[in-house]
Amino acid sequence: MCDIRLIDGPFEPAQVHTDFLARFGAYGAVTAFTGVVRGDATGQAVDYLYLDWYPGMTEASLLAIGEAAAARFEVRALCIHHRCGRIDAGEPVVFVAAAAAHRRATFEAADYMMDRLKSEAAFWKREVGETVDRWVEPTARDAEDLKRWSKT
Image (tube, rainbow, N blue to C red):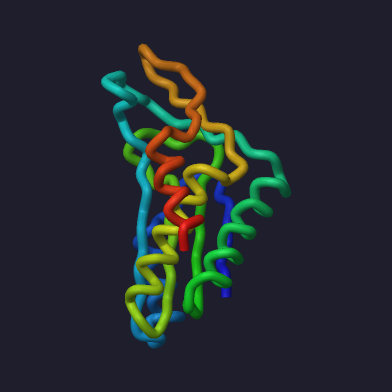
C-alpha cells in the first residue's frame, strides 16, 4: 500500500503520522521522517522555497519512487506526502513513512525514498529571500547518498 499525495498548501505531519500509525502500526515497526524548509541557504536567509511542478508528471515521479521502495524492501505500507508551490521557511515540505514487521526495512525504505525524492522527484526548486533568489539543484552529497542504493 502506497499513500502518495502532492499537496498545494500546508499540511500537518503529526496528523499524517498519527493516521499512518493507526492504520499500519500493528505491523510492528514504523519509521517516519519530516523535512522542513531551511531558513538559511549557505549563509543567506531564505524566506520561502517555491517548488514548481508539472501536473501528472510530478505525481507519477512520486508514485514511481514509492513503488520502487515497496519492491525493494520488505515493507507493508508506505507514505509520501510532498508539498508543492510556496512553502515558507520552517514549514514542513515532505513526510515519508514506512511500516513493516521489522525496523530495519522501515529505516531503509524511508532513507531510500528521501534520497530519491531529493534527487529525482519532478520538482523545480527555487529558494527566495531578501538576498537570495536562486534555482536549487541536487548537490554532490545528494548524488553520493543516491549512489549508495545502486550498490545493493
